[in-house]
Image 1 (cartoon, one colour):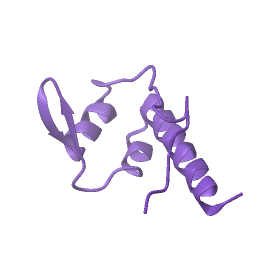
Image 2 (cartoon, rainbow, N blue to C red; image 1 turned 180 degrees about the vertical axis):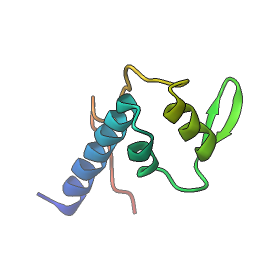
Image 3 (tube, rainbow, N blue to C red; image 1 turned 135 degrees about the horizontal axis):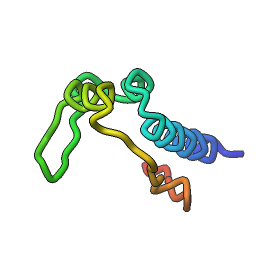
Length: 80
C-alpha cells in the first residue's frame, strides 16, 4: 500500500478513536486527543478545553453518539 493509503487509514482510525472517546464520556481519554489551546464552538459560544472537560467530568454533558465524517466514506487525499 502506498504511504498515502497508510496515512489515510491512520487518520480514519484516529477519527473513530476520537468518536469512541466522546461517546465514552471519559474526560481523561477525551483530553488525550486535544491540545491545551483547543476550543469548542457551539450555539452557546466558544468554550475552552478545560470548560468542556469539566462538563464531561461532572456528568452535565454526556454523549450518546458521535458521527465520523470520513470513516463512513473515506476521502482523505494527500496534496502537494
